[in-house]
Length: 339
Ligand SMILES: Nc1ncnc2c1ncn2[C@@H]1O[C@H](COP(=O)(O)OP(=O)(O)O)[C@@H](O)[C@H]1O
Ligand SMILES: [Mg+2]
Image (cartoon, rainbow, N blue to C red; front, side, top):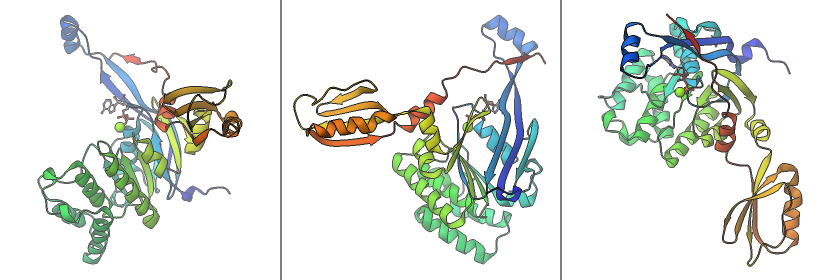
């Protein structure tokens, strides 16, 4: 089935963004020289990025620190102008920031906030209701639903600065979703939260997506978020796309191994382990092996045939390891421009 241009919520072509960054000098003399005649280098934060994201898709946007994820999200939401290339978000050019465009998107950043620090969340909600021109009926039904889904009833009247990070993040999501944006840019929405709260937010996003089907572009350091939410991932490094596809394809490509954990009944390990299997951990009766994918069945059968196996599990290596492996490449050549 071929996809029509209208099926896409986001299209970028040859998208580039450069920053001119002052080079820091070391030592007093160099610092003084640099102060009077500063030297700049050009950082290519986003390089020739082509993306086509379908309506209603959830995309995991991955890459190491400094890869260009936030810069891309800022360009997609119209906060930053591209150096070159084109962006279409639901037919709009983001940097024009026209009212219709702003009504269709929301950018949620884990490290920045839309809530007013000195006001309780209810008052920020009321301000946003005015900004987006919601009717009483729209406002009440939407806020009621979000309060229930995010379980924030008890923190609405508390000054934002006094809320915990988890409460604040949930109120942040509520205010960002009040106008029911068709596109949601989520930049590290779970950063700094404990595991339980990360899970709560993940489940909320899944539930919200099931009900309203927005297009979501999500960056997260927590691979559990990506595994639970993303239908497809786009990986960038040094601003350029290095992978696009299903998370499973990325895993298979990067890590052709599985982990077999075995608990033996007692005594010595009941058989010898051949090539293609490596013992990576042992704790009492528990042994953990890294096994080439094609050897998994053979080893499991061999282990079971000994009659000494109390438990056996087969898993993929942790996603963090797989993603980490992607980013071991060297630094890009920096271009020095004297300005
Ligand atoms: N306002 C800015 N001025 C100069 N350089 C910037 C600016 N914003 C981002 N950069 C640089 O662009 C690159 C990409 O940054 P960013 O988009 O924040 O990456 P990520 O979100 O993937 O960690 C980094 O090298 C960063 O230092
Ligand atoms: Mg970032």
